[in-house]
Length: 459
Image (cartoon, rainbow, N blue to C red; front, side):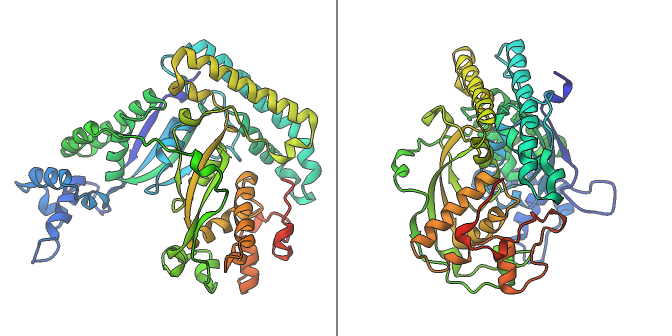
């Protein structure tokens, strides 16, 4: 393996904006000054005024330990993260609402064997052999899929067949495949990461290394954060035991509150979708869902940060169960290859459980591994999600899930459920142009002319 596999975190120096190249203040100056401003009768206290203020350390630690944390949310850090496993991204970086990320896509970027995570306690040679075999399968599967996909795509889209093949082949890749990403969060979230990473019962070595890198980078920016970091490291995070079984019979839509009796306008169909900022009654109701989806699809699902989801620890409800894309089921040779590769991943995973434990063996789980989650969506947020995921360019697995949710809402005769549509259908109905906002990425199908009950995607 190359040096690319080493976990790395770099902070972009963007926590303030000023014309001078010199730093006139730091993170804790902003936090303390914002706190002082709350009690100032003479106007805003600037960060420069707090830099050498005698009581700064006391006030900083006092308000933090008292739970007054908004002062730490004024400063955001953009991180350049590389050499991080997909599992860490899924379990830590994208499992909450307080972040923004731009991550290398396994759908559209070719994955590289060099970029994989090997557990510290594992036999390196054994894992290298495992990864080599899985990536060989990945490459072979792409080649198997291309002719099938080319036969389905419209003429002007046939050049995208390799990308579509990569999108499907990524289901064979293990969770230990690495990612690189831009990731922006505030200081409070970084402190929470540090606390979480020292308590996480999955991929424990990697997340603790990640926490140490966060600490190192924070202290290089502002050494006054040390008491806060030390406090965060001592705060143990308890992962709840989630009784997922009680939700299984409830189905893909349950606990419905209210309806979506909203007049659609530019707030909902415009490119900016200001419905996410200008709230109306749609945020007062919503519904819950139980469903299974692959780890790969949930990585997309997580990007809807107002879709709150409960994700039990993998060990609590583990069973060998994996997603098979519809197009793969249609061809026996392709299906056999896919199933055989996934089963080899599970075989290796089960062997490694006995060697290094479930927590570290997780890296061997395939992207296709199915998990159970329970989500809660308000109507306004789900309207935004349905636009994104009912688009024919969306990942098919999550398209199918959202389509099933909408179908169920329509079956229940929820008022306004007929308004959950892809962006082209909404824009055509309201008169917004261009009808398809995707430009050169137009899927090639005039979806806005289709009956919702006959939305059929071949890929």
